[in-house]
Picture 1 (cartoon, rainbow, N blue to C red):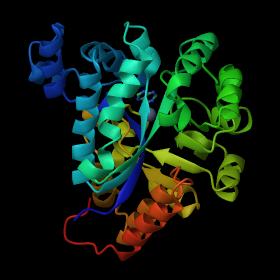
Picture 2 (cartoon, rainbow, N blue to C red):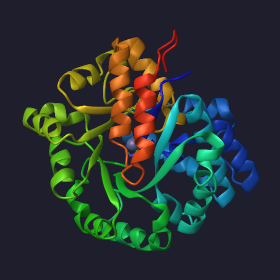
Picture 3 (cartoon, rainbow, N blue to C red):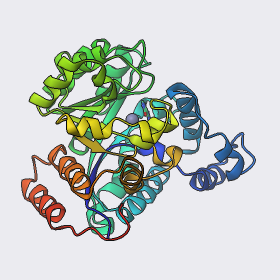
Picture 4 (cartoon, rainbow, N blue to C red):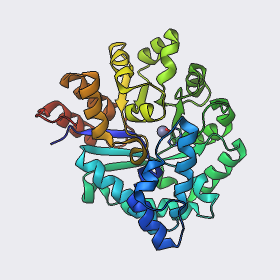
Length: 334
Ligand code: HPA
Ligand code: ZN
């Protein structure tokens, strides 16, 4: 049995496995510029975030109907459940779909067909976080928030993703203020490729409660001290960092030093279909390669539930935390 964990940094579009991409392409009459799944997998060699994003957006062309989004989410939930995920806070990128003529309703209702039954079908509680694309305009983000208003009972929070450098958090001040006024929780990607100043700005200007990635905080000791003091969770994604060359190799990943510094770190998969592993695979990799002890892994699992947006269901959070404390490690760790 794998270690129980929450996944807090997961782009649902990044769970599109090549097999499902071809199945949906055939169902929807979409032609992909790849001969087969092997050829497509060969394109999974990335230089940086942008080279990944190009493929990530290209493959979204196969997602057209509610059923497509339902199938995508169910495929993720089944894989996540097998790797010990008990709670998932799932990002989606509506602007990437609206731009292709796929409506907000199709995306949210489709995802909800899977998420609404996830607790019964997969044993995973879920939340949905709508991300704004930071390389699109601030006006487009506001229009997107407006389009989401009929679906706010299904959306827990907002996030910020896509190409980071040159698109500082301050660009999205107005839409985050509007989201806060609607009672939405706030997170943002910051300090993945962008500088530590973007992390500070996400906290001070956008009011985020959690930072996605946040790796580059290490360049600013005063910021690290603040993140520790304020107990700001960081949603780290070790295999993603290797594939997008944020770190040279997994052995160089600063996760152990970050835990030693007292940072509230969590381990997540980001875009598992593209980066070589789901949540449990990331746990197994940091155990194997970084030599994290079982108690460190238990700390990461505990952190994931502490950092999750379960304030509306503290009973459930307490149950999950008890599962983490009672967990007995076996031979294989994941
Ligand atoms: N970083 C930024 N934007 C993204 C990512 C990521 O890792 N995955 C999907 N959109
Ligand atoms: Zn991400």
